[in-house]
Structure formats: C-alpha cells, structure tokens
Image (cartoon, rainbow over all chains, first blue to last red; front, side):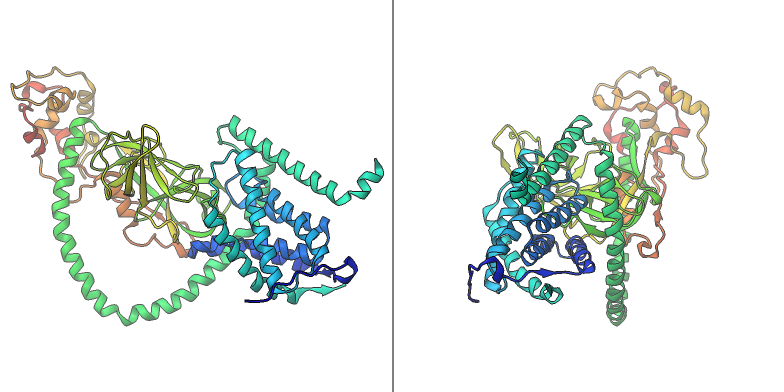
Length: 175
Length: 402
C-alpha cells in the first residue's frame, strides 16, 4: 500500500505544468476513442471513465480553474454526443469536476500515487452524483443509484488513474 | 459590481458555463417531449455529426487492424484442425438433413393453416451486414455504432439482428455510420410474445442493463426457460424473431409480472450484425409455386363473398368461420415441398445462418433469403372460394392439417 500524503502548500510552492497543443487535443481524443472502442470487445471496460481521468489529470496539473472547467466541459460534451441521450449530462458533470480538481490542485500537491488514488476516487463519486442529479431532475431519466457498484467503479478508476497519470506525466512541461 | 466579477471571475465563469449547459439540456428535453423523441434540433444534431465523423474513422481503423491481427492467428489454428472439423461437419450435415425433412413437413402444415386463416406472413427480405465499430462508452447509454450509414441505405427504425436473435434498432443515421439502440437500454421497447403461452408484452431494458418483459398480468403462469419472440406489433421487428428466454418471473409491485429475460444475442460481445433493410409482407394464399401462374379469375374469386357451406354437425368453428377457407381447406392436401419457408424466423435464419456475408469486403453485403414457396399455392389454383359447393366439406381440423 502506498503512502498517502496530502501536503498543504502555499500556491507559490506548487509547480504549474503546461502541455503542447497536440497533447491537449490528442490525449482527450484518444481517451474518447478508447472509451468507445474497447467495450465492443470487453463490455466491463465501460466501468472506467477515461475521459474523466484525463479531465482530472489536466485540471490538477495545469492548476487553472478556467482551463479545468473548459477542458471538462468540452470533453463532457463530446462524450455526450456519442450517447443517445441529450447533450449536456456529461458536460455539466465534467465541468464541475474540472473546476473542482483544478481548485484542489492549487491547494495540495497531487503528485504521489496515494493522493491521486484518493482524489480520483473522490471526484468519480462527485461526477456520478452530479450526473445522477442532472439526469433524473432535468433530463427525466429513470436511473438508479447503486452504491455498491458506484463505489467499486470509483476505486477501479482510482487505481487506473495511478497508471494513466504516470504515463501522462511524461508529457508535462514545467513553466 | 465590476470588482465583484473580477474578484470571482473563475466562479462566475463556472456558473455561466453550467447555466448555459443546463438551459441547452432543458431545451433539448422539452423539444424531445414535444416531438415524442422523433427529431433532434439542428445544433445538437450538428455536434453529434461532427463528433461521430471525427471518432468513427479512428474506430474503423482500429477495428480493421484488430481483425487483421486476429485473422492471422485464427487462420493458422483453423488449418491445423480442418480435417477433424470437416469430418464433424459432414456428420452434422447428415443429421440436419434428416431434421430438415421433419421440419419441412411441419412448415408445410403451418402454411396450410396460415392460408386457411388468411394470415399475412412477414419475411426478412433484405439485410445488410455491418461491423460493430464502437459503443457510447457509457454504462448509462446502451448504444452501438456500426460501419454502415445513409450511404448504404440505412434508415432510422430499421431492425438490427444477429443469427442468435434481436439486437436493437437503428436510432440515428450518419453518412457512413449509424447508432443502434440496444434492447437492454432503458429507453428501448420491443413488442414481444411468449412462444408457448402466447402472452404478449413489451420488452424493455433497465438502468442496470437487464432486459425485462412488462405488462404480463400477474395471474398468468410464465415458466423460466420459455422462449420470447418478437410479436411484430411494434412495426419495426418482423414477427417471430427470437429475443431470448425467460430467466425469472416474479410477481411485481403492481398488477403485472416482473419477468426477467436473458437476451438470445450476446449484447456485450457483438462484432457483426445484420440490419433488416426490407420486410416483405405476403399473403400465402396468393403465392404461386415456381412456374405456376395465378389466374386473375382465381384472385377475383378469392376476394368475392362466398356462400358458406352448411356446417357439418361436428365441424369446428374455426374451419367454417373463415371466408374462402373452405376451398383452401378442401384442396390443401397438396403435397408440401421440402423448400417451404416458414416466415420471418426461417428467413432470418437463412440470412444469418453463417457469418454475415462478406462484411469485411468493404461493400455492403446485401443478403437475400430464399423466396417463400408455400404449399398452399397449389390450393389457390385448384379451387377458388367462389365455388364452395364443389369443394369437399371442410368439416374437421384433421382434413385441414393433412
């Protein structure tokens, strides 16, 4: 079990990273393609939400609330376009997560795996809660909140984030 | 005021983006309700079009590469076991030949009865094989993307099937791809009938991706393992296609049973599907055998009211109640041909018996099943309904079935 250390630091101590325009476009696009393609062969892969993980990663590393919420909104809206439901459900949920993750990234260091596991697990739950509320109350969808399934999915996404973030760390550029 | 917005610039932007999305979402929901989900507004349609056009070519590339790599391995292993497999297949062919003779007799009898009762048969007359290239990637939206679109003749509301059973229906069509709504999605609905008890209901998906049969009264007896077929009532799926089997039937909270159905098609592992592009509806009484023509007089006589014969004392009601049925019944003893088709289920089997035709070739593979040749066609030529007096008495169901 890795150590979980959430260190409170001042804003000046945390390094802000940038990504090239190609990485900023290709990585979310690839996440969306993999998310749509792999469940054709392995249905259970749909439990992971790669676009959400990418949203969280970009938000916490860029540490800009505006960039975080815009990244979340765009990725979410594109993800909505692939479903048969109204456009905006994932858009709203990922906008909230993008804003929240970047706000958290400003306050704490999210470089170590333990923190990443906790942060991603937490934001997955936030994402699902926002999606559920919006889908039921605005879109009128008949969804059921399944605690067991949601918690397992949150943990799996947390674990996946450790691997994915380690890969994406290679593309970071310090400012 | 200005200082407020500059101070809370990020939070204001968040609120603005959220409000814009909520308003957009609300507008879509309202328009969907107004048009009963039939149309989509220009803006959202455009977003979907761009996204699908950007994503599907990449998915097609991945699918092509995946199949290429898999086929290399598969071909090697196939060649290794081909002799043994050939021997087994020959034995299977012999067994199926015997079974075919028996089934053709049943089919011929079914045709005679259909002709007698004036049923219209539905045939899957044309299908297009398609490759599954993607999903929505979401557990909340059970849809698939296939590599055939409007350029291949695909239209919304076409049925999508496999050899095993029903998969779903085409929901949205793009230029070279289409979105298919699976039967296990909570927004889907299929008219269904239980094979042996003939109880009808509506098949719907649940939020958890399961399939349930609704609106079957709780005082009915439904046994697990009973096959569920399409009823044809939804005007999308032809009658008689296999949907699945009853997994469990429990009393629900209301007046209806809670019937869980296990889909016949493996919805979580679909690679190729068939899109039903044309459903033919034929009247078995008006079909001629190959090389035989139906005289116009016979057709006219068929449609004219006939004088009902005096019912025999022990005659069953069904045999005398059908106009024109007497002639058919009297002459239905024509020997059945072994090629007789048995409607939608048989036709779909014919189209999907093997793998969908040449789906990897890049061209839309149009599959046309064999044309139905009902045995009752002989009956039409022989004795039209206008001459009931000359027809043999339709007295018993036994006469009809022979």
